[in-house]
Amino acid sequence: MTTLDRSRPRIWDTDWLLLRQLVHVIRKETSSALRPGQTLLDLGCGDMPYREIIENEGIRYLGADIDGRADIRISQDGKVDVPDHSIDAVLSVQVLEHVRDLDSYCCEIHRLLRPDGTLFLSTHGTWLYHPHPEDHRRWTRTGLIHDLETRGFHVKEIRGFVGPLATTTMLRLTGYAYVLRKIPVVGRFLARIIAVIMNLRGLMEDYITPAQMRMDNACVYWVKARPI
Image (cartoon, rainbow, N blue to C red; front, side, top):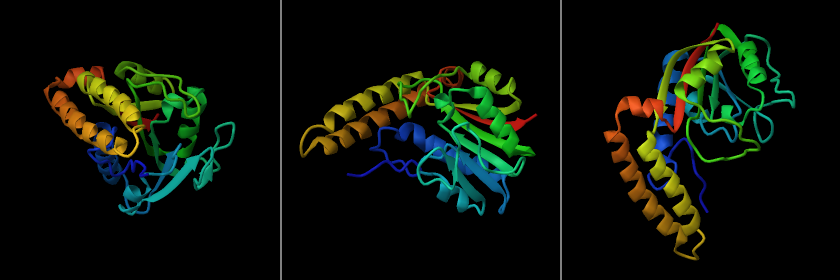
Protein backbone atom coordinates (compact mmCIF):
# COMPACT_ATOMS: atom_id res chain seq x y z
CA MET A 1 0.00 0.00 0.00
CA THR A 2 1.33 3.43 -0.94
CA THR A 3 0.64 6.58 1.04
CA LEU A 4 0.02 10.05 -0.28
CA ASP A 5 3.15 12.19 -0.49
CA ARG A 6 1.65 15.65 -0.09
CA SER A 7 4.81 17.30 -1.42
CA ARG A 8 4.71 15.28 -4.66
CA PRO A 9 1.05 14.86 -5.64
CA ARG A 10 0.33 12.56 -8.55
CA ILE A 11 -2.57 12.85 -10.96
CA TRP A 12 -4.02 9.57 -9.65
CA ASP A 13 -4.20 10.98 -6.09
CA THR A 14 -7.64 12.19 -5.03
CA ASP A 15 -6.23 15.50 -3.71
CA TRP A 16 -4.03 16.20 -6.75
CA LEU A 17 -6.06 19.14 -8.00
CA LEU A 18 -5.55 21.00 -4.74
CA LEU A 19 -2.11 19.80 -3.67
CA ARG A 20 -0.44 20.68 -6.98
CA GLN A 21 -1.29 24.34 -6.36
CA LEU A 22 -0.51 24.25 -2.65
CA VAL A 23 2.95 22.72 -3.14
CA HIS A 24 3.76 25.27 -5.84
CA VAL A 25 2.79 28.26 -3.72
CA ILE A 26 4.62 26.97 -0.63
CA ARG A 27 7.82 26.58 -2.64
CA LYS A 28 7.48 29.94 -4.40
CA GLU A 29 6.35 32.05 -1.44
CA THR A 30 8.79 30.73 1.14
CA SER A 31 11.79 30.96 -1.18
CA SER A 32 10.96 34.55 -2.13
CA ALA A 33 10.25 35.73 1.42
CA LEU A 34 13.12 34.03 3.27
CA ARG A 35 16.88 34.06 2.87
CA PRO A 36 19.09 31.00 3.34
CA GLY A 37 19.80 30.53 7.02
CA GLN A 38 16.54 32.05 8.22
CA THR A 39 14.13 29.91 10.23
CA LEU A 40 10.64 28.67 9.33
CA LEU A 41 8.47 26.92 11.92
CA ASP A 42 5.79 24.54 10.57
CA LEU A 43 3.07 24.83 13.22
CA GLY A 44 1.01 21.65 13.22
CA CYS A 45 3.45 19.93 10.89
CA GLY A 46 2.06 16.37 10.96
CA ASP A 47 4.54 14.12 9.16
CA MET A 48 6.38 17.20 7.82
CA PRO A 49 5.71 16.73 4.07
CA TYR A 50 7.13 20.16 3.19
CA ARG A 51 10.41 19.86 5.06
CA GLU A 52 12.47 18.92 2.00
CA ILE A 53 11.01 21.79 -0.03
CA ILE A 54 11.98 24.31 2.64
CA GLU A 55 15.42 22.88 3.37
CA ASN A 56 16.30 22.71 -0.33
CA GLU A 57 16.15 26.52 -0.31
CA GLY A 58 18.71 26.66 2.51
CA ILE A 59 16.03 27.69 5.01
CA ARG A 60 16.18 26.19 8.52
CA TYR A 61 13.03 24.10 9.08
CA LEU A 62 11.46 23.33 12.46
CA GLY A 63 8.38 21.13 12.73
CA ALA A 64 6.08 21.53 15.74
CA ASP A 65 3.10 19.34 16.63
CA ILE A 66 1.24 17.85 19.56
CA ASP A 67 2.53 14.35 18.82
CA GLY A 68 4.45 12.32 16.25
CA ARG A 69 8.08 12.83 15.30
CA ALA A 70 8.08 16.64 15.26
CA ASP A 71 11.24 18.55 16.13
CA ILE A 72 9.35 20.44 18.84
CA ARG A 73 6.35 19.31 20.86
CA ILE A 74 3.34 21.62 21.18
CA SER A 75 2.15 21.52 24.79
CA GLN A 76 -1.46 20.85 25.78
CA ASP A 77 -2.02 24.59 26.24
CA GLY A 78 -0.80 25.28 22.69
CA LYS A 79 2.63 26.65 23.56
CA VAL A 80 5.81 25.97 21.58
CA ASP A 81 9.14 25.82 23.42
CA VAL A 82 10.79 28.51 21.31
CA PRO A 83 11.94 31.98 22.47
CA ASP A 84 9.77 35.02 21.81
CA HIS A 85 10.14 36.67 18.39
CA SER A 86 12.81 34.24 17.21
CA ILE A 87 11.11 32.82 14.08
CA ASP A 88 11.29 34.40 10.62
CA ALA A 89 8.22 32.65 9.22
CA VAL A 90 5.43 30.41 10.47
CA LEU A 91 3.82 27.90 8.12
CA SER A 92 0.34 26.65 9.03
CA VAL A 93 -1.08 24.23 6.44
CA GLN A 94 -4.65 22.95 6.91
CA VAL A 95 -4.46 23.40 10.69
CA LEU A 96 -6.65 26.40 11.48
CA GLU A 97 -9.94 24.55 10.93
CA HIS A 98 -8.90 22.06 13.62
CA VAL A 99 -8.08 24.75 16.21
CA ARG A 100 -10.63 25.17 18.99
CA ASP A 101 -9.28 28.46 20.35
CA LEU A 102 -8.32 30.84 17.53
CA ASP A 103 -7.27 33.57 19.96
CA SER A 104 -4.65 31.37 21.65
CA TYR A 105 -3.38 29.96 18.33
CA CYS A 106 -2.94 33.38 16.74
CA CYS A 107 -1.43 34.79 19.93
CA GLU A 108 1.21 32.04 19.90
CA ILE A 109 2.06 32.74 16.25
CA HIS A 110 2.38 36.42 17.11
CA ARG A 111 4.73 35.55 19.97
CA LEU A 112 6.89 33.32 17.79
CA LEU A 113 7.34 35.69 14.85
CA ARG A 114 9.91 38.42 14.60
CA PRO A 115 8.36 41.88 14.09
CA ASP A 116 9.15 41.65 10.36
CA GLY A 117 8.22 37.96 10.16
CA THR A 118 5.68 36.31 7.85
CA LEU A 119 2.74 33.99 8.42
CA PHE A 120 1.96 31.58 5.59
CA LEU A 121 -1.40 29.92 6.24
CA SER A 122 -3.83 27.73 4.36
CA THR A 123 -7.22 26.50 5.52
CA HIS A 124 -10.49 25.28 4.09
CA GLY A 125 -13.23 27.33 2.54
CA THR A 126 -15.27 24.26 1.55
CA TRP A 127 -14.58 20.64 2.41
CA LEU A 128 -15.87 17.53 4.14
CA TYR A 129 -15.92 17.21 7.92
CA HIS A 130 -12.55 15.70 8.88
CA PRO A 131 -11.74 15.62 12.61
CA HIS A 132 -7.99 15.24 13.29
CA PRO A 133 -8.82 15.08 16.17
CA GLU A 134 -11.35 17.94 15.92
CA ASP A 135 -12.84 19.96 13.08
CA HIS A 136 -14.46 23.30 13.89
CA ARG A 137 -14.71 25.76 10.99
CA ARG A 138 -14.92 26.65 7.32
CA TRP A 139 -14.23 30.17 6.02
CA THR A 140 -15.30 32.65 3.42
CA ARG A 141 -12.57 34.90 2.04
CA THR A 142 -13.84 37.94 3.95
CA GLY A 143 -14.37 35.91 7.13
CA LEU A 144 -10.82 34.56 7.12
CA ILE A 145 -9.36 38.04 6.57
CA HIS A 146 -11.49 39.38 9.42
CA ASP A 147 -10.54 36.59 11.82
CA LEU A 148 -6.84 37.13 11.20
CA GLU A 149 -6.86 40.93 11.14
CA THR A 150 -8.81 41.14 14.42
CA ARG A 151 -6.16 38.89 15.98
CA GLY A 152 -3.08 40.95 15.27
CA PHE A 153 -2.20 40.30 11.61
CA HIS A 154 -2.27 42.31 8.42
CA VAL A 155 -3.29 40.14 5.47
CA LYS A 156 -1.06 41.13 2.55
CA GLU A 157 -2.32 38.49 0.12
CA ILE A 158 -5.07 35.88 -0.08
CA ARG A 159 -5.64 33.34 -2.84
CA GLY A 160 -8.38 30.82 -3.47
CA PHE A 161 -7.52 27.33 -4.71
CA VAL A 162 -10.09 25.15 -6.58
CA GLY A 163 -13.42 26.75 -7.36
CA PRO A 164 -16.93 25.39 -6.71
CA LEU A 165 -17.30 23.27 -9.86
CA ALA A 166 -13.98 21.48 -9.38
CA THR A 167 -14.58 21.14 -5.64
CA THR A 168 -17.76 19.14 -6.24
CA THR A 169 -15.77 16.90 -8.60
CA MET A 170 -13.12 16.38 -5.90
CA LEU A 171 -15.81 15.50 -3.37
CA ARG A 172 -17.34 12.91 -5.67
CA LEU A 173 -13.92 11.51 -6.48
CA THR A 174 -13.15 11.13 -2.78
CA GLY A 175 -16.32 9.08 -2.34
CA TYR A 176 -15.82 6.95 -5.46
CA ALA A 177 -12.20 6.17 -4.56
CA TYR A 178 -13.17 5.18 -1.02
CA VAL A 179 -15.68 2.62 -2.33
CA LEU A 180 -13.53 1.33 -5.20
CA ARG A 181 -10.50 0.65 -2.99
CA LYS A 182 -12.57 -1.89 -1.08
CA ILE A 183 -12.87 -4.11 -4.17
CA PRO A 184 -10.38 -7.01 -3.91
CA VAL A 185 -7.38 -7.14 -6.28
CA VAL A 186 -8.45 -4.48 -8.81
CA GLY A 187 -9.92 -1.87 -6.48
CA ARG A 188 -6.90 0.35 -6.08
CA PHE A 189 -6.20 0.27 -9.82
CA LEU A 190 -9.80 1.27 -10.62
CA ALA A 191 -9.62 4.06 -8.06
CA ARG A 192 -6.53 5.45 -9.77
CA ILE A 193 -8.18 5.35 -13.21
CA ILE A 194 -11.23 7.21 -11.90
CA ALA A 195 -8.95 9.71 -10.17
CA VAL A 196 -7.08 10.54 -13.38
CA ILE A 197 -10.35 11.04 -15.28
CA MET A 198 -11.98 13.19 -12.61
CA ASN A 199 -8.83 15.20 -11.90
CA LEU A 200 -8.63 16.13 -15.57
CA ARG A 201 -12.31 17.04 -15.48
CA GLY A 202 -11.73 19.17 -12.38
CA LEU A 203 -8.79 20.89 -14.08
CA MET A 204 -11.02 21.86 -16.99
CA GLU A 205 -13.81 23.01 -14.67
CA ASP A 206 -11.41 25.21 -12.74
CA TYR A 207 -10.09 26.67 -15.99
CA ILE A 208 -13.55 27.83 -17.09
CA THR A 209 -14.56 29.11 -13.64
CA PRO A 210 -14.25 32.91 -13.36
CA ALA A 211 -11.40 33.99 -11.07
CA GLN A 212 -13.70 35.98 -8.78
CA MET A 213 -15.96 32.96 -8.32
CA ARG A 214 -12.95 30.87 -7.31
CA MET A 215 -11.95 33.53 -4.80
CA ASP A 216 -15.43 33.78 -3.31
CA ASN A 217 -16.08 30.02 -3.24
CA ALA A 218 -12.68 28.37 -2.84
CA CYS A 219 -11.99 24.91 -1.53
CA VAL A 220 -8.85 26.22 0.21
CA TYR A 221 -7.53 29.70 0.95
CA TRP A 222 -3.85 30.63 1.09
CA VAL A 223 -2.86 33.67 3.12
CA LYS A 224 0.34 35.67 3.47
CA ALA A 225 0.21 37.93 6.52
CA ARG A 226 2.42 40.05 8.77
CA PRO A 227 2.18 40.65 12.53
CA ILE A 228 0.96 44.12 13.42
